[in-house]
Image (tube, rainbow, N blue to C red; front, side, top):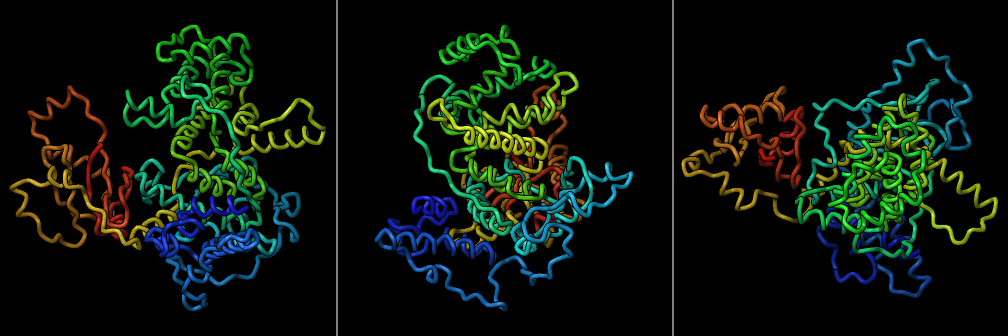
Length: 558
């Protein structure tokens, strides 16, 4: 259990607190993490540290610093160091649901659905815009009641719940928009928040021990995603999903979306064995023209199933299964959203490409007869792999495996339906990352010297003066006009700025040349201040960004 607690603390960015760490003082990153936590999040960390210390004492090992040395500030009702406002616990709402368990009893007290209920089932996912963490809004579940979101989204008879994404003008961020440095710090907060959130919902989750599994260094099957990406980046710098996996999905999209029973109908075992051998030998020169859609589907499942580290990883596989213990679908989506942030980058990007393809398969169900449930049931055994030792299994064991397969199918169905929300960062997480960056002792993030030389011209030195309130200076080193001051108002968006540079920074002669040579899409980035680097969505309101990060630089680049 000590190793599991050490792994939890390490994933939360608190590795220096474990035994064997060379630091004698709390490093800046740990101080920054601790300074951003809410009371409930801090209580989760304290509980982990106490468990870790107690287990170390039983093993007669030297314990780490006392938990009171880490959390030096006393807990009082009047002083809350958290940046998020904590509200007093309200009285539990009227019990329309089960009062002794944490499951929603949908079979009792159901309201009669109105004729317009089917239309109103598309609900706006406005919980992404809240300033408080998910764990702060589910206190009612501790008393066996239901929170506001449960009543709002599950209070009436409904079919399939579907969330509409929030408006892009609210400035929401996707995982692809942040730098790897910000994503790492985001993972620290998401890890602590997920544990706090599940604990508040009464759901227990345990980390799995990593099994020993042989890996390969050549070929494509049985090779880790990182090894495949390392080889691919020698030819395609910056690629995020293995090229072989992209090619396999492309073949299926081109010829298999309308094939009846795609992914469900198995291909020939001998044929798959031959194709695997040829692809492992030299897949880049492989001719895909004679590959049938059912064989390509079999290769896709084989590739996922034989990954040395499962796509959902050994570490988090049991936590994915724990999400099924959450009674409310809206909270299941929120937990999955936090959990996917903890996956390694290669696994997260590959899973995203897979879910996008599976949604396309479901969208053609009138032709291929593969509904959402059919696709989920077919893919569950490949994503939720289970190592069986021997062929003899008891009836109880077989029933457990069947229940796990059904649960895995429900999770895959959730991820397919709500995948657009799963890659969107809730507002409170980004706010905690900003505060963490601000609290660290590192100097303010600025543009590199190389970029600064590109941004500065000889005749531009006279313009180095304090800008007025609400005025920003945007730099575009790849344009002929490399700098421009822009007055912000409530309607100014990132698209307005990039469009203005495209129209004003090019001369007529230069514009005629560029029409024949396509240039990569240009985006506006927020760089420095309390964020390392963030790509802004085209409809993002810049005045809101300016207010939360007034000291950042503004940069246009691909």
